[in-house]
Image 1 (cartoon, rainbow over the protein chains, first blue to last red):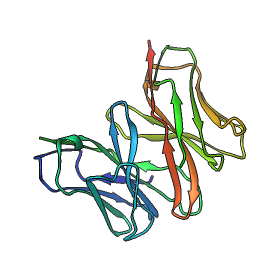
Image 2: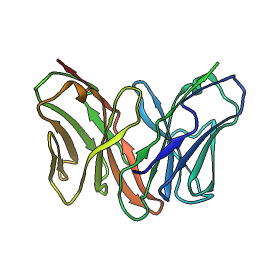
Image 3: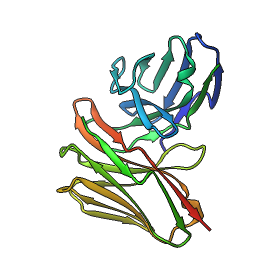
Image 4: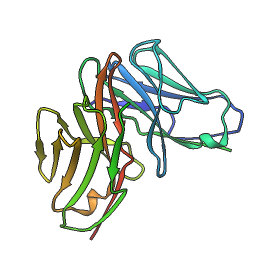
Length: 114
Length: 114
């Protein structure tokens, strides 16, 4: 089974802190994604990456950046955390290049910014 | 870009009844339609998918139908059980030069009453 591992299940950070959320997949997938999940708002795409060092903005990139230095690792960075970034963050990966496949999701990181 | 609408947002059924969740999509170029189930506190998991060259697909108690002309697809769960209670997400996928991009519906919270 493809595994997508997110480094933290729960995280509490202070306003203004720089926050790193890490995601690692073990199946050599090309595409990786970061989503934010809030009640009533479904899954909203923050950023995605289709190759090492490549990144594309999703629907809600403001206040976030990403890094993909290695194929298996995709990091989401909150440069200066704010309370409105309190949310569940889900990482996903897909084989996806030149073919349609489903995504495999990580277990999520519930981030609380106080 | 693609837009996926999902209805209803909540659905309550009696154990043993059938449940139907409907999604519409906007871009006729979409050709892959997965469904995800997310149990409380867990990651979304792919439960069934359908590609545009097929009109219906079944897997035990779940089935998905696709009407490309009308641009809608549906998830059917028969003989519902309490363990079917979860949030279900539909998605539609377009292939572009970055690989496959899933656009998710807003989710349906299914509650199966024993």
